[in-house]
Image (spheres, rainbow, N blue to C red):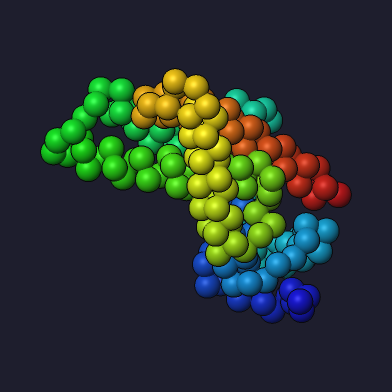
Length: 196
C-alpha cells in the first residue's frame, strides 16, 4: 500500500475539514489511505506549524471526561438507548403499531449489528480497519454472538425472547463500556506519542 503523502493529507484536510484527530483518521480510512500513527503525527505537526491544519488534538484527562464529551462518545449513548429500548419493548410484549415497528428495528440492531460492532471496537479501538471490513465483521460477529446466546439458552428451559434479550443486553452494556474504554485508552496513548 502506498505511503500517505503530504499532498494527499492536505487534500483530505481541505475537502473534509476535520475538527479533530479521530475525524481525520476516519476520513483517511474512507479514502483508503491507511497510515500508522508514527507516520501520521509528524505530518500533522508539520502542517500545524505551517498553519495548513488548524485543529488541536484534544485529549480528555479521565475516562469520565471522555464519556461526558458527547461528540466523541455519541455511539456509546446510542447503543445504550437502542438496547434498553429493545429490552423494554420485548419485556412489555409490544405487538402493535409504532411499538412493533420499533421493536423490529431495534431488534435487528441488537441481534444483527450492535454486539459485533462493539466487539470490533474492543479489538480495533483506533479504527485500523476499513469501513467495509468493519461493517462485514460487525454483522458476522453479531450473528455469531446472537446464535451462541440462543444455543446456550436453548440447553435448558430458558429459551424465551425475554431471556434472550436480557442476556444480549448484559453483553451489549458490558461490551459498550469496554469498547469505549479501549477507545479512550487508544486516544490517550496516541496523545502521549504525539507530544514532543
